[in-house]
Length: 405
Ligand SMILES: Cc1ncc(COP(=O)(O)O)c(C=O)c1O
Image (cartoon, rainbow, N blue to C red; front, side, top):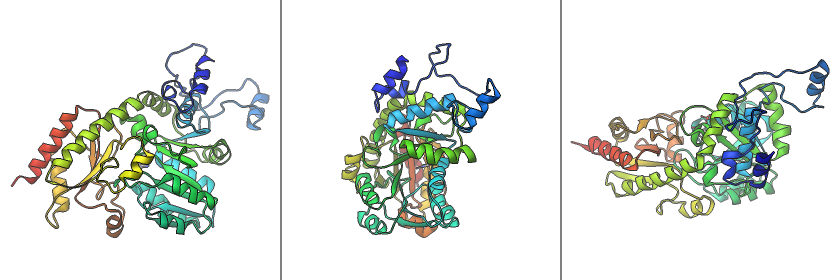
């Protein structure tokens, strides 16, 4: 009871990262227990009947309810100050669930076009198959949002900062435009993390996370989360998940609970490391362009400062290269790294790097990549928790080797 009280009092407070949602068993364990069970038993046939009729609230089957998952959901909701949270098996299943549970044939979605490859696939390839109209806009241009939102729209979706060019969308202004039109605003808050940006406070309606990223942050499990008002979670998301099954495993929910306990510490330290890496890159003559929201030279620096508490743990940069040698130069640099791992994951305690053109965004056409600014000489760096000098020395030495005659 005491822990429940602490959680209630400290809505949207860091105490929730450690204690939110705790529901101890009669053994009074310190750490949250893992309920690795698919089902639950009923004392009587009558109790089972009542449960299925929803006359009695209790755990019935882990596809749509499990005590460990429940703690994770409550912890996430309390951290965001959201009324409710529903956990999913991955970030992509969180987005897919939001869209497929709410939309129907004839509905319209307006989305920022700077999207992670799989988000782009769902919006541009899957939704149209079900008779859903889509329009992609330049997320940084409020005029484009305004004109797209003149037509009746059900969902507005965007990532901010976006993957991999860190484009910022003005959450407050786009939410106002969307609400005038009756649309619900869904924000992919993966790059910002729950620590650095609070979309619900800025007017958004729904947040989605790939909990695989910073929330685990140690490269162990996949997971996702949907945060919204109680009505959306209970009446739209729950029946969809209950009947279609993109549910999170209780083991993964437990790992993510442990991840949440150190999320604030890890993110803050990773931001500090990223700032040091940025300083180094800015001075290096072989770096052509840097994308980082809190870099004074970044196009959307002012907006980023207004809506984020920190610039994040990810930055992208372009390497100087001769014409037609862009990919060769980037690959030479990547292949000469020693400490930093080539991996398409991000938000990890290990520093990871990828070449978005040929990995996370390879499916986009050349034109689409050009339009989004994803060039062959660009790499995306997710800065981890190693000694920052080791990270910088590794980048420095790989650049030197890549440009050696
Ligand atoms: C911005 C963004 N959204 C969603 C996802 C998908 O998350 P998951 O891999 O957990 O499905 C990713 C994964 O890289 C991402 O970068």
